[in-house]
Image (cartoon, rainbow, N blue to C red):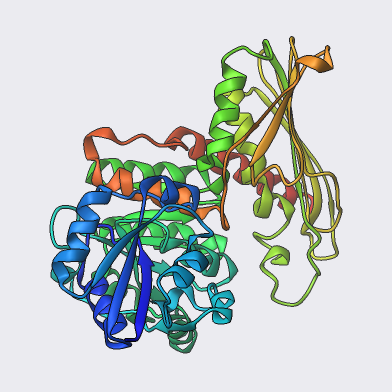
Length: 448
């Protein structure tokens, strides 16, 4: 008897799950299906699991392909199961290609092609229909985000748009998307929401068209570069009841959210200063978005992250803002410092694409300070420090993968829970960020 084993969450059991189990069963005579526990799903960063473990097991059993069902509750279980059950073949969806190659030492590993172009009626057997997400743009950030979608229940990457059809088609084939488009209106008809990862200057028009077409929008930072554009988009989203979110992944990280709670609780006393730094060395190559003359530069590229803790901890009502920067021959800032003055606090932002500095976040208070070491924007751990070092405390929380799965999970939750929408990054904060970007670009242009 040839035994096959596969694993999965199998949340909101749909036609794609059924087909995968059907093909896995066809690989042998006896199919063992491992269904993950809620605790293990959280540990591995699987977001928004809706169905209980028992319901998911019942759905797998009801499909008729599983000869035996087991529960998976820890990361290292697969090798033990393969040996325990004398498994010949391990099967899993092709979106995990390469991840489980280590099992080749113990059995055959087969990556089954993902089910494409499943109709919306097939995608969910009941309750929450999976949100069909369309990807706008197919650069590095889009690639990272689409790799995170599989960890979030209730959303499926369905299509990609790029003005160059050949580029969109290549992306769709690489990530096994059902469709690729170079006509934006046609693309919008095939999705429920869009993730915009195109160049900065195109965000406003893509987001505006999507909202007017009744589509929810998750837009990469900076969402827009002008205050009036940000206000228009959020007003439009409010009028139509649609979700509009700016994709600054740090805002959704569990450890960063915990940091904000501790800082605001008074544990370090009254906060007088916030310093945030994000630099990376980017080669000045032709066509590099970081060096585009009009909208490129270190501040537009990186400052959204640094502005986040300042606005979250000190608010949006600063009364003085000034910039110092160094520019390259094209007029693009390669290193910038921004200084904020509030009624009773100050803040500093440092960004760089041609100058390197320590990328830490420091929040200073009357009783102590909070330090997040580089790279602070991927907040996993932070330390609360006091005059007496023996009282120092360390905190940590998972921030798996590239970190986008938390913002995707919030995107899904806000779409599905109209009456309980709660935005980690508020409209006022995003609008303020856009106004700061606009002020900086105007000043930089004026000195060109």
